[in-house]
Length: 232
Image 1 (tube, rainbow, N blue to C red):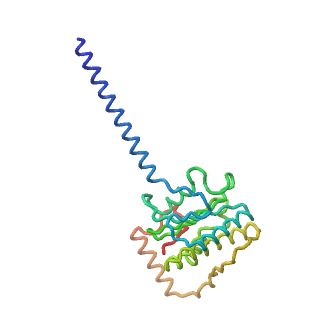
Image 2: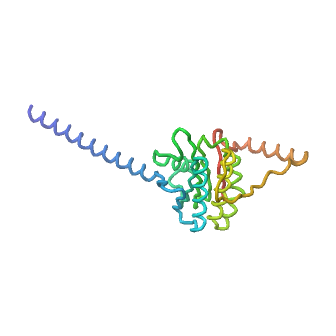
Image 3: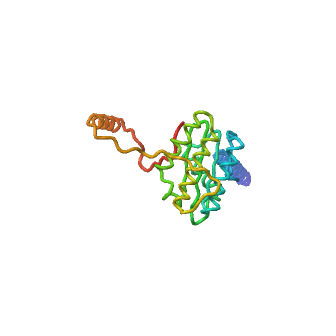
């Protein structure tokens, strides 16, 4: 009888030991996966993790960011990264980086932060905007800035020029919305949309055909997705 009891206890202890080992392994794997998915910490106005910004451009970008913060209190941060891996896409990475490990960008309660993210491997630029700045930096305007001022320079390898032009335009837009003046920031011309083209039946037919093809193939953007970036 005692032998059976002792054997049962040894079996229980062995099972408990394996359970503890399994729990430790699971926790270690989870922690390692979480560490791999953590974005770099943002510690300065310009965080050039990809090492693509020249010293002069970086200095001028910082001047623009500090000028905006002094004038309106709004916070802009620039970050370049080699890749957004292992995140699924640049949007997911930008949202995580905007959180900045719980500290966020901008003032608590105001949500007045803005992140300009440049991902080299994915060839993507993304502008993540806090709710407090969305009245000034709409999705359409952010897309226009990245498309017209930033990505053309990136295609030529002029990352400093592209980021500087985009940062100046975004800061100027916020300053205009806040009714403040920026010191030491050169104005950046942004092309305005031309007047709508005259009505042309051929273009209407082509557009209808394209929409029909997209609807039949199940394409098109998913509901709820918001684009603030462009590919170069």
